[in-house]
Image 1: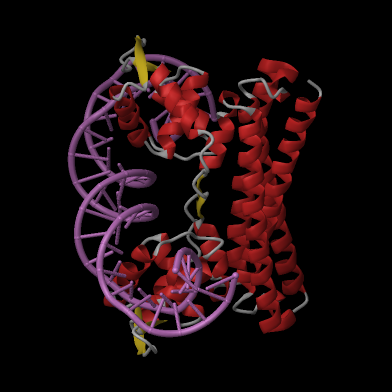
Image 2 (image 1 turned 45 degrees about the vertical axis):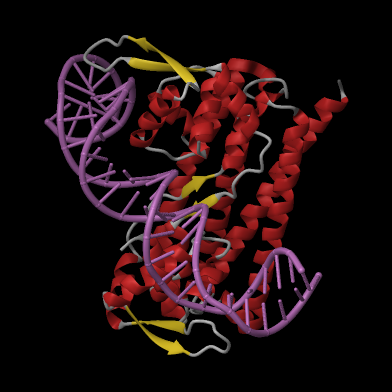
Length: 184
Length: 184
DNA sequence: CTGACCATGTAAGATGTTACATGATTTA
DNA sequence: TAAATCATGTAACATCTTACATGGTCAG
């Protein structure tokens, strides 16, 4: 089993969900495509880590498969938790462009930075919304160590801080660029 | 060509380098293995984007291949720069564990957070060292938009800020955990 | 009336990791 | 004396992305 498998298993453990839902709830902290989720879910089901119930859909949509964790899955998940996590993977094409920015016009880079800021502002809004939803649903309970949503709550705080930091950095770079352009 | 190819090309454009060197200079912002670098470098060379010169090594080390960019490579690189970058990829197993932390002992999570802090402190030191080296080599010039190292300098500032933010977040979570554990 | 949302999935291809091979020199 | 550094590479495997298929409902 790989990290994604455990990640999905962890979300299923908290709340039985469909593949579609899982992807939505991963948004903001783990990027994944459906074509990766669905085969993995069915593999985990075959290995007895989960079971599913079909939920009929209106219209011609395929039935939802609502996966739940089994005791075997839960055991595996608990074994995984204390193990030292793999180092974070980061690949960000924007940073590669920043690294090479001397080859292009300052104006081109300014545009890229501005688009970056806009994209991160959207993410900040998304994270705030996630936090708001959790606060609304669970009240001050989310901030309780014993809450099953405590981890998720902390996680979105992390995303929020990082994305705000990214915006601040972009604005800092832009201010340097602007200062030097105007003093020429 | 993919993002990694352009990333390598950008570094080669600034300074002719070997695969080994490239990996070292990517550290901190783009994780890659040699087994990915070497085939890609030779592919780019075959496509005429780079050329290389052999540099003899002492001992029984294989000769260094010092790659330089060609005008064809430079043209391609300049076309890539203004295009909207692919969204950043992030997959961080630690975050997946945080998300599932309700399934484990607070003590287990405390350990994971403490190890996380230690790992990020090392990275902070690495970034500061990178920044120091650039400042030493180029003086105030690195902070000049016209410097070919300006982008790299900004990049390491970004890494520094993010890693410091991560440490601050971890400490914040730990403080909440400790508060609730002691008040029980 | 165009695109986003809902919902699952397969197939092909691109990308990334791990294991292996070589082996002297330096650092802890 | 064990491990890290230097230096390039191949092979096998795992993971991830893109393109395709289906098709009704809802919002702008």
